[in-house]
Length: 318
Image 1 (tube, one colour):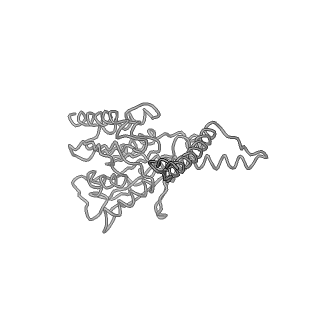
Image 2 (image 1 turned 30 degrees about the vertical axis):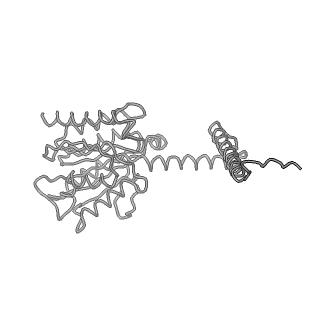
Image 3 (image 1 turned 180 degrees about the vertical axis):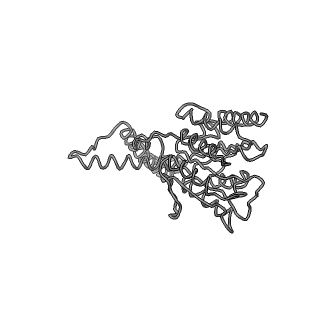
């Protein structure tokens, strides 16, 4: 009971600090991350308020979170083994959304709050710099190879088909039910001391509505966690948001859709909206200002170059 109260206080402190620094430390480029496990016995309920990179987050998960202890064969410690390491990669949650209900999913925040505070081991990272050069799932694989330099001790690695991983040998599953079936199958075939790595990437609310899918992020997290708990497997879980690539691909898809629609019709839209007019007017003003600035500088230089006498001699009388 005391650990739950401490976990609740840690999560509330993380939300409070995120609210205080909403217009300072937090920015649209920072995302939250939460690591928890009800099976790892530890009194470590900590919140890291520093702004760290996504690569440093992966390193902290393997060191502070202890993932290297059961994912690396040379570092395995059988005192507190786990059967499954879950990783949920969201697409829309930002650091500012944790402390505010505006432009966020309150149900997702409540789900993470309940899982985080009910765990014996928990770590919170409210401010993670959104990765812009590499996707979060690839950073996880790179961190796994760096942490387990000699031999990776993961017996089975599974990614959702919505994850973009460079390794083509990794098994991918489609649909939430396939993950549930996989977890039940592995529960029967998994040997003692083995750990499975399961990574689920969200497709975003817009992609789900277009594809007709009904599972949101909080539903996927809740159902998978419940499935693992019902199977009797011990687990540790990490949630991190990676909205940069989702936003980029969403913008690209919208642009390609509009282009295809324009090419399919006989009349292509060439109008200029209010934003276009504002940008064009601003550009024209900048160009005119540059021209006048050059004229002013040239005039000042010419005036400075005029050499006139400071006094004139009086004419002599003839």
